[in-house]
Length: 402
Image 1 (cartoon, one colour):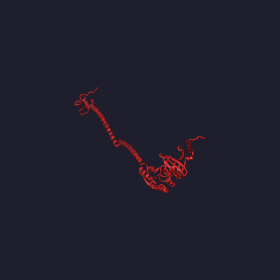
Image 2 (image 1 turned 45 degrees about the vertical axis):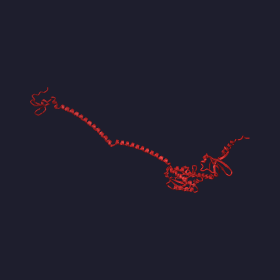
Image 3 (image 1 turned 180 degrees about the vertical axis):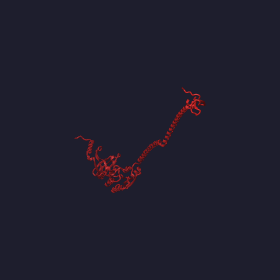
Image 4 (image 1 turned 60 degrees about the vertical axis):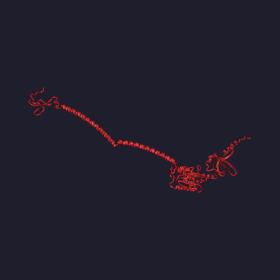
């Protein structure tokens, strides 16, 4: 007899068989929910059954959080996951990662087929996406006026950027008539010239509720819109084909409103910062202009005619002073020379000579000066002039120097 397995060993062996079967690792199963229970941890435990069999199922909290609604007892569902062995109980069970109402599988197939077709035509290309206006003046909103989504949009815009105007283009957002009405609402907004951007919005719902946003005509209308389109359809986990065709997609209507509007508080802070920088730059510029003005003023003062005249006047005063001094020196020198000449003339004058004992002799008869013995014969009457008077004499004898 072969060596026996322990319970744990055989369980591990069976687990490995399950894990190696690729079919069991990626399987869709349709059935009816029973024994549904949500644990305090957030994990879901239920049984999936049909008329002949039952299958234990578990969905971890992280996957359960993605569900738009929890299944209920008796719901017909389509579940995706992998089948593996739960070792502690030695039973196999389905570990679910997706759960949706029965019939959704066909919708998903249609969704993927249409998505591939439109993507191949280039309707979802990133190059087609347009930038959003930073500060829109008027936003066109396409949604139902009675939905909570429209109220959320208004609340967000009033809180963030109340300067923007909202223009509602109403349309049904669920049901058979929704897609044609949304197309007409988009067309109304595109015909206006006072709209900056369009917000297409709807709150959360099941795949069937949101199916109108997968309508081919609507997707083409969004892609062909003259104005940029932002979608906020469903919840964060919900994707529709209009999301791929739009210029921007937001996870919720409120998030779309935030995406389209600047934060008023941030704008005010930015304005304050820019005002402060502008004031600083202006003050610096004024200081620079004041310094240049003062420098120019000093240059003008130096170059002004008044300064030139003052400098010229000072130079005239200096020159006048130098001229006066030179004139005084010239006059003094000339006075000194004149005095010297006067003294020389005085010393050479007859009076000076007479004062020193010399005499001047002239003939009395005609006053002719006698400078030689030949000028006066014997018996000639002479007048002798001394420094203090005259004498009259008669020549008695002439005697020449030998």
